[in-house]
Image 1 (cartoon, rainbow, N blue to C red):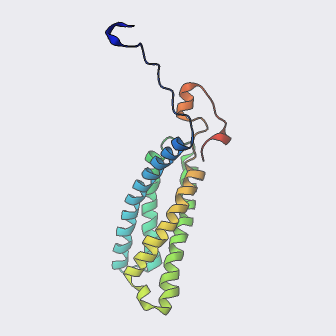
Image 2 (spheres, helix red, strand yellow):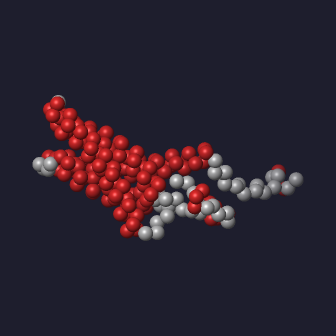
Image 3 (cartoon, rainbow, N blue to C red):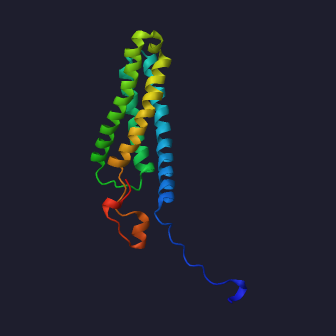
Length: 181
C-alpha cells in the first residue's frame, strides 16, 4: 500500500462515449446558446419593429427592416459563440447562406403577419391592430421561423467539424459522414 493510505494514482478519465445522453447534452447546450443569441436578436427586432411602426412605416416594411438588423446581430452571436467550434472556412459564403436561410425564416414571419393583418384582418378588423401584428409577426411568426432557423443554420451554415475536438486530441479520426448534423 502506498504511503498516506492512497491506493495509487488515478488513471486519467476517458471521455464519455458519444452515446445518446452525451449528444442530447451537447444539443441542449447548443440550443441554449442559440436561444440566448436569438432572445437578444428578438429584443432588438421587437424594439426596432415597434419604433418603425410608431414612426409611420408600413407594417411589412417595418418587419423586414427590423429583421435585417436583428439578423446581423444573430449571425455574429451564432458564429462566434453558439457554433464557435464549427467549420468556419469561408466567411462570405457562410454569411450569404445564413442570410438566405434567414430570408426563408423572414418569409415565414411575414406570411404569418400577412395572413393575420391582411387576410383575417379583413374579416376581423381587430387583427389589424399593433397588438395583433406583434402577436402574428413577432410571436407566432418568430416561433415557427426559429424552429426552421435552428435546424437550417446547424445543418447548412455552422456545420460541425469533420474531426471533433476531443477526437483530434486522442488521435482518432471520424469520417465527415459520421459527424453530427
